[in-house]
Image 1 (cartoon, rainbow, N blue to C red):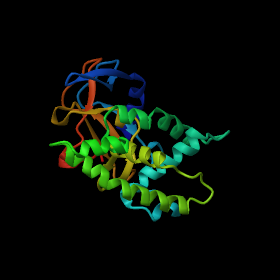
Image 2 (image 1 turned 90 degrees about the vertical axis):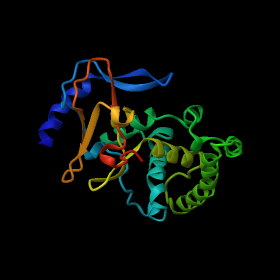
Image 3 (image 1 turned 180 degrees about the vertical axis):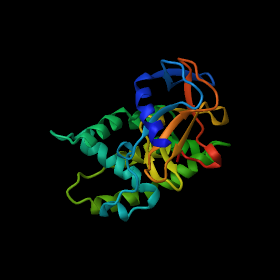
Length: 245
């Protein structure tokens, strides 16, 4: 069952390593195993305590659009746990701080070519270009909504630190590029470790499943063995449903 596989997966995490791999001529950071893996073997389990975000329940998030709530929650955590860390953190907060610290910064998202994170003048130029102009226009249209959501958050933030536009933009970019959704099992969430696997579509060598009762998500080797040093990859459209947001 899933619980037994999850126990086995805990032993596999220590064998996983980050490494650069080439995708269409570009070197991209991905995940690999230092040991060969058998077909169907469990890799790691993402238990509920390790899943970041979910559906934020605090009053300050309820007035926000559902699609923006996780980004604001993540930005708030970054401000409170990374930018202005507490002297003492709970184990969960320490885990969240380590994960958030490892995420790309806004500058790194921009350097990576994420349109959502781009400065206004760059988005304006993108919107004026043929073929890709529609992408720039979508980003331009989203900016006023983000400004409005930010105003609502800051008005309801209570004792929490004021959030800047760049903070909010970082949160929305991070969740748009890395969050997962498992329909019928969990709400949208950040998936540590799981978000390190690059998506290559149907040729991916790993699969994942979510247990509706526990909410735990487990990644496994697909139908073919994986050699040591081979990249571990996801298919974000697994089963015809887009799991990555």
